[in-house]
Length: 143
Image 1 (cartoon, rainbow, N blue to C red):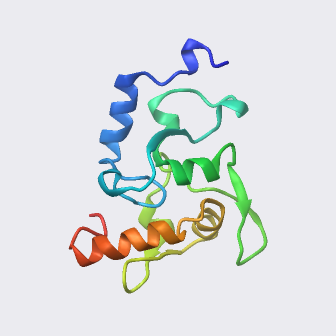
Image 2 (image 1 turned 135 degrees about the vertical axis):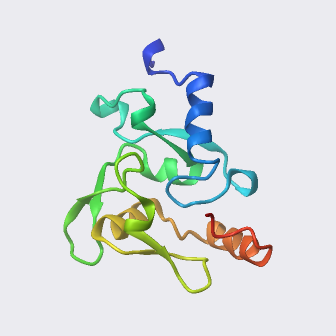
């Protein structure tokens, strides 16, 4: 059972969500239209002594958070090397990811990006379908 110091307070949860502008910091899905609930992700997992501080938390849809779980590394499908997953507190999303021409698929620009796409299944069918609808409504990609 987590201790009180491990629990994410409502105020900290709100800070993390506002910092992310209510978008998943991994798949860039907006919380308002997400088929998944959103949660706070410990970038460095609690099981690896990750702290419950704003600097170690990311706003994440349940789909990404559930796939990341306690992972911090994954095999880059391009090189076969084990690399660190994307860290939204230390890295810039656009340095590691881009959109395809239709803005429905995330493309990895780096080994970190490619490994994160694979590990978290950032192009899973439900999210791609949601992006397609949001593009047609002029609500995607995020700024």
